[in-house]
Image (cartoon, rainbow, N blue to C red; front, side, top):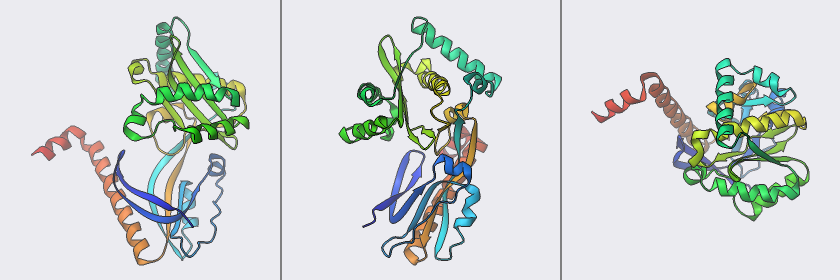
Length: 301
């Protein structure tokens, strides 16, 4: 039996309501997205309502929307940022703006001064190392806003650790911890997908936010990956943010595409989602254009 897929109506991190359909899910790897490879969609079974394709390059939408049996709805548009790892770290940094390079050097210097003149980053790759990484990373994750507010911290429990061990056994995962005075204060975990490492989980102890631990750890991880040369790409995945923009060397314009079988209920859900997403997008653009404070003042009148 196909499982139901949640289709949330969301404003920012807050989910207002969730609709559900039985969907065949597909997500393009970074390698396939860069190659422009069209995802292979199996025929729908009688009890399946359609497809949900995430991280789809925008220029592939028209090709997938030609099927007369399904109706396309674009849920969101975004840039999928990535960085090439097959280069020297100095050349990578040279691609940053002068302001960004200066900011990164200042953050590294400030952290080193606070930690006795050194930056203590430890890498974890083998199966025998991953347990130590997991224990320390979970301790940090439990304090992060991602876990406390968004339920998006490093997964907890035996099943999550077993998955990490399996990937590490095959050489398909990397973890890093940033230490200050012998205590882990930030973690980064990246499993592999083809020749790319995937930006899965990054978190830091909020007590040390003034030291920019996420930036410091990401810089040191990129330095080591470019020296290691085991992977070609670092996939910052769906969604945008200053952190991803800073460390990327390129991006792909992508969409999350919902293709539903034609029928009253499916089309009604598709239109409801599309209308809600459009309204949220318009509100966001209005706030950005007018200024949040002015909008708040008007709402208070």
